[in-house]
Length: 195
Image 1 (cartoon, rainbow, N blue to C red):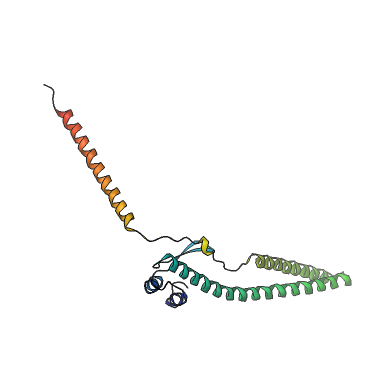
Image 2: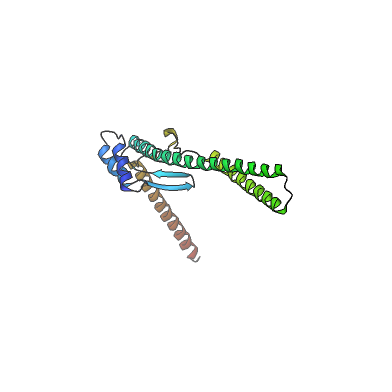
């Protein structure tokens, strides 16, 4: 869903970007959103914008759109689940009535015993399915996004970081050269024969 151009355009249109950086942020947000599944029910959304405020605005728009869509799906699925629970509850009640009716008649024929055991098995199966559906209903939750305060914003790269990396690389090269020179001097003094 997040990778479709229509969804991305909707996010760009509904995000409330800062006025100064809106044009750049719109291009970046349209081109860059990626999702990574961390677990079955936990995803990471990676996006780029011109500022941290624009990233937050895009995040809020994405969260709102996904929550709206998932709420509709959740409501539809909850109705289907509740209808199944109600159906199995009615079946269970009806099977119990039939079984109780057969037990009250007290018929001792073998056909009666077979039907009673069949009704009892059907009632047990129906009650088990009903129990499972009710357990599923308790476990199903709506899609939730973390609050903005829990969202990690990676800041922009600065020139100082690049300079420090270049200086660290230069220091490693110089250290290697000094070590090589020291080893070469040691080897050359070890080769000179004493006279």
